[in-house]
Length: 489
Image (tube, rainbow, N blue to C red):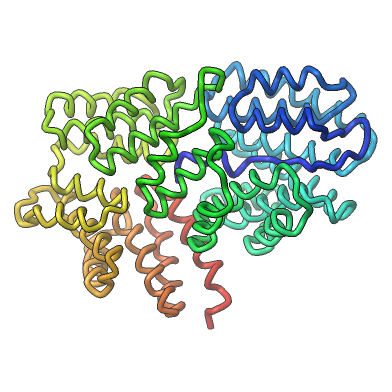
């Protein structure tokens, strides 16, 4: 899901001590845990206690800056990281050899690459990622049993293997090569086959995120989420688990998890938790959902997600019969925030449509997003499609009804509606309904083992390139095609 794009880039260390330069001791372990709890000042205090010759704290410092930049997008933090990075790498280079030496360098380069991706410095970002990849490969050859390296190389292979076509030019230029299945096996080996150590819980967070959002493996994801992970570990655990629970249709569990998030005034601000909690409550049509959304706006220091948040506030006002606030917040969607991500792009697109949404159609949309499918059907049954005057809402009505029927396992009815919708929408449509329907149709036929048909539907998704989720949908289609490749003739 959108909020968790930085989970891809988590890094982990081993409990083994190899030398004075790379001593992963109890103090470092404690600092690492503080980092993922977003208790950065406490982590920095522990780091300051370390021997100056120990290089592990350099990785911990990179963690802190990476998370700060991802959450706040503060230019001063970016400048600090860019200036400090070269110094960190030089210190590591001047250290004695160890499995940690290349691993730390790879992780810091990976952080740098994804920070640059966030800043849309694509070519420089791909070169940093390439440096990380080559370091992982070299380390694997020299130390094949070094667990953290399997994690680092594994997740990078999985990500490279599913990069959208839009960014394949970067992959080709720098010579990267990914394999989704091979990467997953490396991750599994590190998590389940190596001796227990303090970082396996974090590795599971990363692994389950990829398994669900890239491989669409709900069975594995649910097993890990409900049986193996612990929300009390900290803010990052809470956010990841809630995100996945919501995506898998357990909105109530997501709300409870977010409400019980272990955070206090000593934690670095993480406003996205309030945004997600507000959205989850809105999906349940809670009257107090606006409180969390407003808290996000009060505490965020970035322009990302602002348009989406104002859109959700407008929807909250509309379903609670407050037209004045609806119009106020919709105007804010246009004037505030940026459009770096799909959700903000979609919010802006809908804000410019110059008509007030049908309230029952909106309620059906929200209830569906919260996986309250029977209530969603009741809401959409209150809509008379013949009275929908706007072309966008006519298409959306069929989309929402088809998706609700699909989730209620009324597949034949859903397929009939989906086929009509796809036939009526051109590939240059600005709406995401048709390509999303193709993904869902592909999933239905994949489940029926009609792999040739599923593959053709996934391929067609890529022909839609004018909607807000072009990259995300293309990535999902590509991953699905990799998943069924062995079953094709």
